[in-house]
Image (cartoon, rainbow, N blue to C red; front, side, top):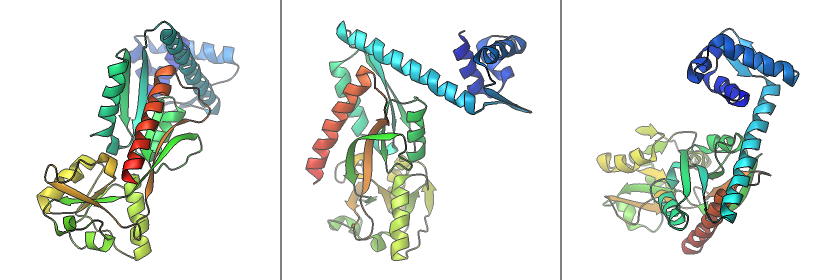
Length: 299
């Protein structure tokens, strides 16, 4: 294996011994390769800890360089394939759960109908993890609701999304065009975990109105929220891009008044300053067009 691959193996495993097992090397042989590289590099790249190894600041910079080089090579390879008409490539996306049931499957299938040589990987991430994926080159694109830091996040498109209350389709709330937060909180409530953008906006709205959020169930799964509101006649919360059309599967939903909860932002983005390979760049343009269509419909 190449030395850069061995370094990444140690980073993933957290120790020489486990990385050596994964790489079919002896621990002593792998340690010599790492030490030899550090001598040639001019400084250590790992901190040697009692229970393993981790990158030091120099190592973090080196890994960023390695991943950047690989990304640049993939971009050039994709451009060459595009010139020859092969239309090959790979697109890696970090996204909020809300994009999984309906929006992304349709978009990926539509793109692959035109470019069947392109493959995809989709990573479900919360708003912090999605940004981290971009900076580590784990993902080319991020489509995430209410991201947090935005330091390395270059916004390609922004789609406003109001928080919707989700409930059984025979709930009295279904008779309204929009609902108030106080009406949603009168019964049993199912909430997403604190790491998600929908929960962040709910916390802001509840604090502003001095309402207590007292869920019977708190979960990282929006799929569980959609199903549980049927079982216990509860109210859950999501954004509309992740919800099915009206009154399907026993569930209805209504927007919560912006007097109570401000609209959030669904952002399509990439790492700031990165030149994307051909396939991710083209897929990003397709997503921008589709999000623009949704904006026109929802407005």
